[in-house]
Image (cartoon, rainbow, N blue to C red; front, side, top):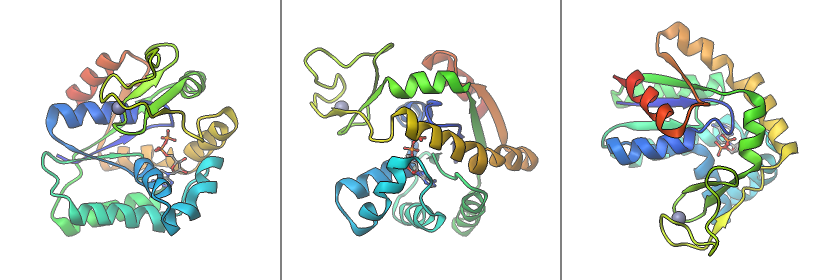
Amino acid sequence: MNIILLGPPGAGKGTQARKLVDERNMVQLSTGDMLRAARTSGTAMGKMVAAVMDRGDLVTDEIVIGLIREQLESDEGKGGYIFDGFPRTLAQADALGNLLIEMGENLDCVIEMQVDDDALVDRITARATCADCGEVYNDNTKPIPADGKCTNCGSSKIQRRADDNEESLRTRLMAYYKQTSPLIGYYYAKGDLKSVDGLASMDDVAASIAKALG
Ligand code: ADP
Ligand code: ZN
């Protein structure tokens, strides 16, 4: 089964993707994580996208489609793919459709995670992530442990993202509404769309997604 998690920044796509990886043995493909990894390892591409990402704008379709293509060609897909943060434009959606056809695969479901904008601002400005394992912390609901060590992997590299500030978030929200939200209509028309309430508790959101996946 191959699915897309669609929703604005802070909707909880990464959190739910990680649950699906654990529970269903699926493979998470997050273009945001791939781009951040390219930055950390200091590749030419990583350097090129850094300023764009920090500002909150979208990286070019060519770059992210290339990243996804590379992963699809190298991975085995096990229990299927979860596309997290990709596609974000209609051109990316078309490219993904073609890549899946080339591989003889289907897109089974697009889950739209609905959340209101005020909640997004609160969530994102309170967010921190473990650089080593991806565990997500939140100042209000799941604070960073007093000893600064990740509860999941013990790493002391719990960090805030450079783009998790109010100004960049505003740009990311604008990019979402202008460039990504048209995908909701696109997948609805194709009959692939299921919407869930992203404001419910983490477990309730997971339950709604499980129900949508059948
Ligand atoms: P969030 O969903 O919280 O905004 P992501 O980790 O998915 O975070 O993405 C972080 C940034 O990486 C985006 O703001 C954008 O600059 C870039 N990015 C990630 N995925 C894509 C994509 N599919 N197309 C273009 N840019 C992307
Ligand atoms: Zn960790």
